[in-house]
Each structure stands twice: as C-alpha cells, then as structure tokens.
Length: 275
Image 1 (cartoon, rainbow, N blue to C red):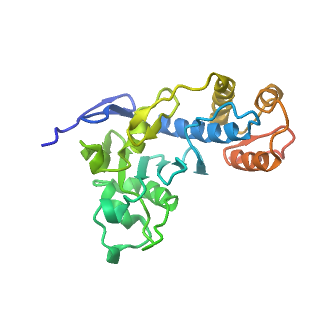
Image 2: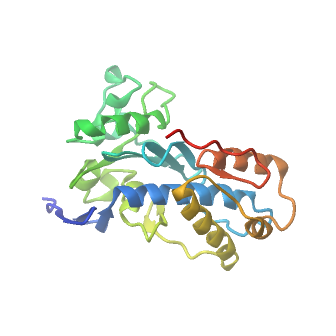
Image 3: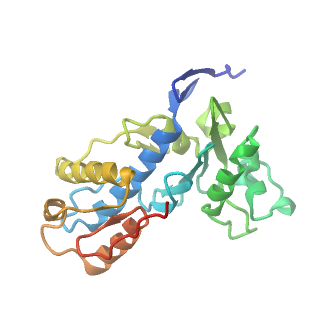
C-alpha cells in the first residue's frame, strides 16, 4: 500500500511529502514567477550569438495570458512537455511523456475522446470548480494526438487555496505515471528557478560558467517584468549580444518577449493597460 502523503500549510505555501519525490512545496505566485523566468531565459539564451547558455531549462517555452490569468508550455525538444496554467483561484498542471497520453495512461476510451478538457480530467481527480478556467487554458496548450485527436496529457496536479491534489500525488513509482517528474519540478523550485525534469528525476544541472552573465540578465529583466512593461538596458544588450545576432532569431525572440512586456531599445512602446 502506498503511504498517504502528509500535508501542511505555511503562509501561502502547500507542502506535500511524497515517497518518490520527497518534499514538494507548491505556491501559486512562485509558480508564476518561475514560469516567467523560464520563458525569459529561453528566449534570451537563444538570441545570444556566442551561445554561452546551452542548458536553458526550457527548449521551447510558450506563454499565454498574463500574470493574473495565464499559462506556460515547457517542452524538452523530444516530445515531452508540461503546461502550468493559473488564475486568481490557483494552478492546474498537466504533463505528457511521449506515448503516455490519456488513452494509454488514464484509460480514456477512443470513443470518449472530445478534444477538450474531459480528455484529461482523469489526471485531476477532485478538481475544484473554481479551477475550471485554469483547466481550459492548460488544455488549450496541450498537443493533439494524431491518431484520435485527443488532448495529450497523462498526469496532473491542482492547487487551490490550502488544498492540492491530482494524480501526481498518487505516484509512488515513477513508472506508473509517466510525466510526473515534469510536474514535480514545480514543487522543487529554487527561488524562482525551475529545475530540469529528466526521465530519471528532477535536478538542477551545473551551469556552464559562461552562462553566468545570461542568468544575471534573466534575473534582472524578470524582476522588472513582474512589476510591469520593461525594456532591456544598453548595458544588458552589450553583454547579451556583443556581436550582431542572427536576424531571424532576434526577430523571433523580440516577438516572444513582447508577450510578457519586454522590449528592445527602439521598439514600439507597449501601451499602458487600461485602469
């Protein structure tokens, strides 16, 4: 029999002690900050013409919405990914490892596929009604199975007030819920940094020494972006792009970062949000 996880609350943090992952701490605001930092890290690292930071935590970060209601898609470039989505009410997380979607892992029948939230609801037992909008956002960023059109995720978690749940917390053997590592990473944040989820566990890789200047810029830009629209400084750009970057890569990074209110000097101003 799997031992029941223990649960406690400190301030806004929810702690769960699991047999496989150890102590997990989930906090809605920390998750949002870490998602923003991972997204900024991904796109600033890719524009660096010297490629000093090759171990960015996200291979292809995608952002939707804002800091109040939004979602972040994080993949490893090999077919595995997770999505975390948040509203004022809390967080929903869903993950997929290649070949282990709702049909294979949640027992969803082909006839029951809808292409919507019900495809993956089995990964989120006990989901509060207040988190339905977060679920809808998360599902909107999931991949679609080419065989049957199902939304692909095989494990999930939810966080609401002083409660946390989902299939993630039933896992005592990682082979029983592929993708669980990717979600556990959001309970193992180090400050605002997201660890790397691998098939054999969750860990912080030792960064290349050359990545330190990139991390410093990421930290500074993320902190400013959390407070509102911001622009990369002249000094930050001199460090980030000491020689001209690839124009297509630069244009893509600029487009992606504008989604979170970050611009380059000389870019069109971001209009203020209506009050």
